[in-house]
Each structure stands twice: as structure tokens, then as C-alpha cells.
Image (cartoon, rainbow, N blue to C red):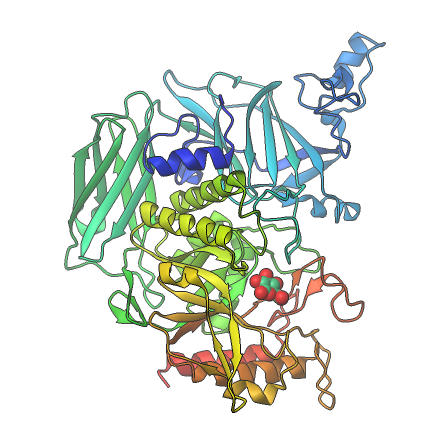
Length: 618
Ligand code: GCB
């Protein structure tokens, strides 16, 4: 398969041997700290709805005049040979600043789903003897074909996980021509499926970088606190000299130096008792330690929090103490009237500050796919617990081995990317998937995969609820899902009063029975158009309805005996093409507690009051 890095195929490899080197596709942990070149910035773009750049109109190879990735200066070529015919010119095509979904380049691209070409030129720092070079993309939605200096260097499927392509032998010292074909078309056998409830932001949506490493480098370094009080490190080297190398994992502030020699596969597992001076990471004390991983050839640094997370009966224990998750769900979409999935440190901080300081929260559900690395690093720093999930959403093709391989690859890539983030306590494998045999098998495999890759966190999935009416008219809510047996934390999406016409006054009397494991309300919510008040009629979409919905739903939640947290739907209104009520929605899901531009709706203060009381232990 050469340099192809189809996430699914790789996933299968990774999961056979979670820490074995996967040729051509290193994780490149903390690539942002490595030597190299930030490739974000001004790029040229060219839309290609008929995919002429990939295939001729009789299905043959693409014609010379259409191959956007050729190593050519079109203007110079036509001056040299005036009869030459080119129907593109990437060097003179319109420009946009990446990363950014293409919605941000031109309003006419809002509903464009198809192929888009991006190109830029760059000079590379000269490689020293033995050094290697990679192109690392943090996310391209949905598939990417990457060409450097006219040569294909790899492909990737999946819009939310990073991938790296080795280009050591293709890179030039100057005037490199980098072209990326991005196809946003959703596939019925893809993940997520074509129908979701969010905007499919096609494009290069996260930073990309030329990364330069030594010949053999530290590819993964996972440092954690184990439940039995040890600091453990799992390190994986990549390169020809990965075996039998001495590795040091140092945390100077703790006087810690974990050293060992890598095995034949280039991996090292080492642990030692945690020193008494260790300050455990928590939302109240988001202490991060500088960690240095050193070999003869390489030095990698990270900032890592150390904490434990477990369940005991129906409790969730953080550092051994019961905790209530005061959360909210968030999509990867920045504030503003015209978001383009541009997550910078500032835009991420604006969202998370509204959770932490605004709502008095300690928890965020990063729905419905792995969010930007910027977001999870910031959660570490700000002290927010995180639910991280993959886009196995609604109806993926559960019977299809290709879809399963793809989901497994995404899960593995997400876990390998973020295992060092203390903030992440929950890996979620799915959202609202209807119960069938193929789905149970599919999700069961994903749960097993999480356990093989990371034994230091909890596994969950957002499940559909079951509703029963007792003979006396009492509504009993619960979960009736065989997957529950495999999970650590049960999570329910519950929308009574919004997607049902139950009068809101009935909600507090709905009964949630005690569960044997911790229960979390992963979603509940109601739409409200900011500024629309309707106190008399209390119609849906009014702020009054949303406020009352929150009051009544929280009254129901307060009585659920084993409820250990919640992440209502959702912090901010978000773009959702399914939502087309011309007055209230206009292409937005309005279940936000704040408007697109950050105006707080009355329900915001209801949830804040609930969380303040929880925080105060009331
Ligand atoms: C859900 C989905 C979420 C939707 C939400 C809604 O259950 O998980 O993606 O956006 O409901 O607003 O209907």
C-alpha cells in the first residue's frame, strides 16, 4: 500500500500491536513543538466539482491541462510553449488563509460538497544528514490527497484526526510545490455518515506543518499516573535505530528520571512510585509538569497533568474522590455570525471560558468527533474535564468491515494523539446509534480497542433512552441497551419536553431508576432564538420555553439517584443544514445557551445556578 495512510487500514495494524511502529505513519506526538515550518497561511484554491484533476471525462487519466498537482508554473510554461493548453493555474488562483473551512473563502461555497484543490510553495530548512521530514496535517475534512513537487506522497480519510506523510526524499531546499486535493463528500460507508446534525465544514480545518526529526525520534510518549499510584511512561521510537535505545523520561520538578532501554519494536514501558510531592491535576488545580523525553538523538517536551479517574459502584472518582461532572456539550465551531471552523487558541479559549467561568462548569463534552489539539491542550491548562468522541453517529454502515476499520483507525489515532491530556477522562465510541446486532458487535469492538490502547480512562457512549409508562401514569426513563454492560459510564441523551409534547410541568415527576454504574445525561436541550420572548404562549423556540425546559429538566435530574454529571446540548447555537425554520432557525440549531455571537440566553443562568449550587455542595 506504499505511503497510503488510509486510516482504516492503519487502524487495523495499530490495533494488532498498539505501540508497534506503523511504517510511514508515525503519530508525531507534540509535532507543534518540533523543528520545522508552519504551513498555515496563504494558499491558493481551485474548485473542481467534476474531479477533472483526478480523472479524464472518459474515465482515463486526467489531461495535462487539468492536473493541479503537476510541478509546473503554468504561466511560465505557456510563455515557453504558447500552444500549451492549461485550464487551471494554481499560482494565480484565488487565495485564502488556511486553516479554515472553505465556507470562509467565499459565501457561494456554503453547500459545496466535493473536491477542492489547495496549493502553496515554500522553502524548506535544509535537512542535516540523517534527518527526516514529514508533512503533518492535524485535520482535513473529509479525504485528502497530498502531492509534493508533483509526486503523490499519500492519502487520508477522516476529517478529525491527524496524519503524517514522510517526504524526506521528495523535499527540495527551495520552491517546494505542495498541493492538497480535499474532498468533503460524505460516504455512506464513511464515518460520520452523510446525514448528521452539523455543518460539514469541508477543507483544511486545522494547522499543518513540515516537521523535521532526527533519523530515529520519539514518536509517542505517554506519561500517566496509574490507579496504584505509579508514574508510568510508554515511549515509542520511530526509525532505523529504534531498538535497544536508552530513553530517559524526566520530570525535573519532581526530581524524576525514568530510564530504560527500548525493546526490539522500539518501545519502552517503565514506571516508578509517584513522589509524595506530586500535585494531582484537577479542575481546581490544573497543575501541569514539564516532561522531557530524551534519547541519544532526540528530545521531546510536553506539559502533562497527572491524575487518576475510576468508577466505584455508581460513583466517578477523580483522584480517589467522588465528583459530579458539571458540563456542557460543544461543537468545533467558533463564535461569530459566519463560523468556518477556525479554532485558534483565542477562539478555543473564548468557548472554554464560557464553560469554566461563565457556567461554573468543570466538564466539557467535545461533540461529536475529535476536536482540535488546541482545544484539548487548553482544557488541560484551564482545568476542564473532557469527554472525547469519534463520529460514529446515528447510522453508520455497521455491517460494513470497511466502516469498522475506518472507525477503529480514527479511535486509535485519537487516543494516540491525546493520551497525554489529563483533561480527557472519557473516550466515547458512539452517539445515538439504534440497537441492532451489527451495531452491538461494531461498538463492542471499539470498546475493546479503547481498553487495549488506554487502561487509564473510562469508556462511554451516548445512548438512546427507553421510556415506559407505569399503570399509574408515571413515566419511567432508563436505558435498555446491551452495550451498557461493556461501558464504565452510562450516558443518556434525553429530550422529553422538546422532541415529545410532554408538558414541561410533567418532567420533574419522570423517574430515573438507580443504575449500577454512574449515569450521565450526555444531552438534553431545547431550541431558543436569542431575543425571542413569548411568555404568554410559551411556544417552542422562545427563550421562555428554553428557560422553563431547563428548570424542569434539572428538577428531574436532581432526583435521578445515580446521576453523576451532565453535558446539556449545547453551549452555543451551531450551523446545522437540517434546521430550516425560516424565522427561528435559518440553518442554525438553536439549542445553544448562548447565541452564535455569544449573547447569553436566560436558560444559561438557570444552568449556572444549578452548577453554582453543586459546586458549593448544596
Ligand atoms: C441529538 C444529537 C445532536 C443533535 C441534537 C438535536 O440527540 O446527538 O447531534 O444536534 O440531538 O439538537 O437534536
